[in-house]
Length: 155
Image 1 (cartoon, rainbow, N blue to C red):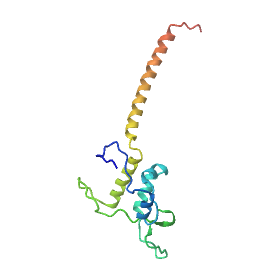
Image 2 (image 1 turned 90 degrees about the vertical axis):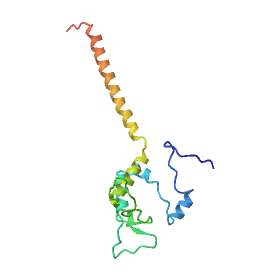
Image 3 (image 1 turned 180 degrees about the vertical axis):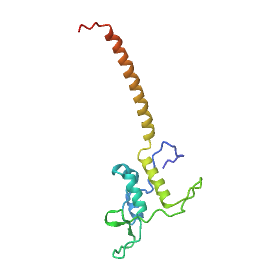
Image 4 (image 1 turned 45 degrees about the vertical axis):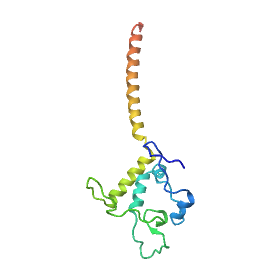
């Protein structure tokens, strides 16, 4: 297989070679592409944040199988993904406290960007297009006024 140094324009490579490898590595459940989930669900970023923060010990009346975890925000309150975040797992260069909440916000922000990496560029282009259209509208308006001012109105 041909390999080269990565470029900023490259697409993200999945962590698994194929669907079977992903299923085997995740306890028999195929993991969804979370960047797509951010856009696919209404409030997708909030949903992912809630799932990341929703891990708790199960209530005493609930028993879970091995490899299944309690999450209050998942349908059925169980999930096969182990709790992915733990306080202090990363070290921020600026000294920010590496709390679970902060890391969950960072993950969700990254996934939102990964879902639409060109969003900022499109916003800039859209703003320039609106300015251009406004200028053209003003020019057309004054041109129309000048042209129609030559016509005598007989009222």
